[in-house]
Length: 167
Figure 1 (spheres, rainbow, N blue to C red):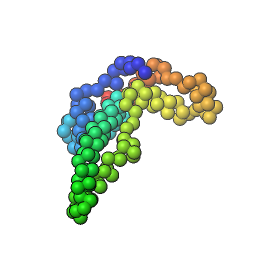
Figure 2: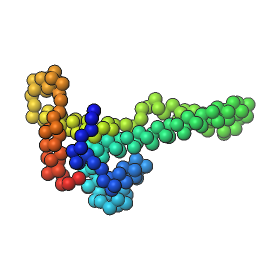
Figure 3: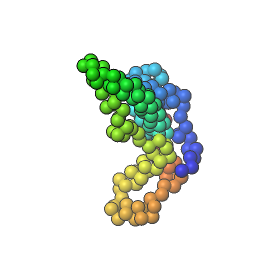
Figure 4: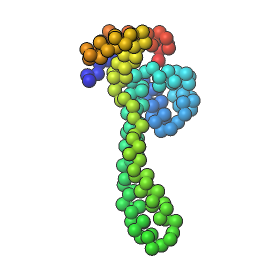
């Protein structure tokens, strides 16, 4: 999907810093204090700012991938410890087994949401449309591809700006 510049889809340095801190596990309140914004502002970014949501999801995916790669890199050493420990009833065996079990974390699925801000915005528009729509309206839109126009995207961004202040 081609990315269009809707203004609000751009991130400030403050928002990018907040994304890095949140992805690293910092709390909302600690992150807000560090970047110099009110915690409510940070919560609004997380809930209503498509580019912020997309960038945070992408950053989490990067971190998850890096952690999984590091864990997989430990697997040969863990297997060596396990092989050497088979005849030695040491605690190293249980540690090696734990590393091997952790190497299967990718089966649980990475904590990833949508990473494209425009797609998040489109979904917000569709949800807004559905609030007052009849079942027939939703079915017709679905059959017609349920596309979102630039006008609807801009209206959603403007209505959000009016309801939540400038995020």
